[in-house]
Length: 491
Ligand code: HEM
Image (cartoon, rainbow, N blue to C red; front, side, top):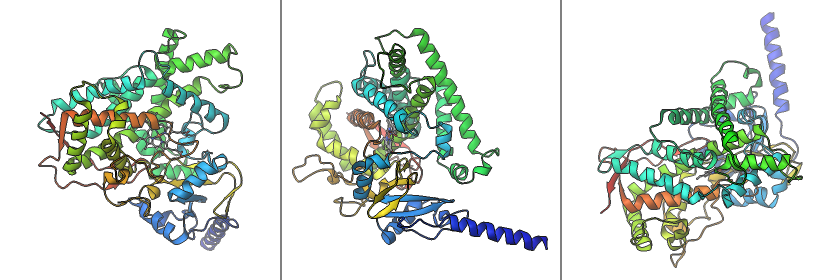
């Protein structure tokens, strides 16, 4: 009797769930969801993009899936992504507020905030990065300083091989540290490694199935499951940032900013003295900490994973590497340092970097957006608050948009005259008002680091390295599998 009752209630519960999971009228189409899981079970966790491609072929460039009880709208192909994020930006720039990462950052800072808080912090961070009101050191100088350390590290391994994962990760973190905290760490520094390990671990959990369980099963959030670890790591990283901010408050001199923290303190001072009345009203210590964390988080894995994929392709495409080196030698001659301006004279190197970004496909599903009002796209109605996934991978591999969509080929970015050209489908940084805030910094890093390395070293696949594997490990930020980078000094 009890068993029958339980089954009956379970049946009613599942039926209710199914009714709740019905797509509203004129909503983008998609596969039928199952109760509780939605469409999750039809995705292979190691290669979910394959399933998205199949669904896109079946339903078109705008379709929907259910993750748990919530519908996600997927935008596939560069045209519809641009239409939503650029042409109809006003309705597509929101951020979801129910995800683990939103809760962790309390919808503060830049990445997960919205409205005036987001606008004010984005404007501040962009202006600070662009104009570099950061004392004597420009962004380029800070990158070149780090490049010296990368070079010195590689030199120690000349004739052998090195693990590029830690090297590029440390270097990318250090560049961000230099910009926001005004100082860098030695690669061997234990405290630095602890910070980096925490950041890696936090990123890993935030992009794991545990984060998805947190997102779709609110009742489980209070249990001591692995997602709680991500919150602990965040608290520890926050404590570090707070400590550095406190030190800055003691040593800060108005009008002489050393780094982004000083710039932010100056902005807060202006607000207090009412020199800025309309803007920056949301500036306070809490927002500053999350903003600094945002840059640390967003600027590390992305750049270092791109560098790793780029180095792998250069090792396995020797001719392309040699063409880069010829161009670099010709343009730089006997000059000691490369400058970012040199990129205009290096179309081939530019094409190689962009092609590496295309195939590394670092952020395949972008950062999720939400709609800020009831809206329409391609004839479908999308209610306010719907989660939107700009499927950036689909554009980076889109047939008809690239001369060679399925191979690593710099010709994708060169015209008949050998000039560098950027096709519209190149959107690894996304597009519109939410476009990656660190795009300028990342481009500069990739160029200065690559040119310096290739000028001094030949990258070779180690004899004992097995068969090179270019496939990507799926994740919120993707990367190739670990490998060793063979380095030889160039004469
Ligand atoms: C956002 C890609 C490097 C900071 C994003 C987004 C993508 C992206 C796809 C989502 C945009 C959207 O929501 O539509 C990349 C790639 C990078 C890179 C491929 C390197 C190759 C960096 C760096 C920084 C950074 C170095 C640090 C300065 C940010 C921030 C956001 C963001 C703060 C949130 C912007 C907002 O919500 O307004 N990035 N990124 N990124 N990125 Fe990057």
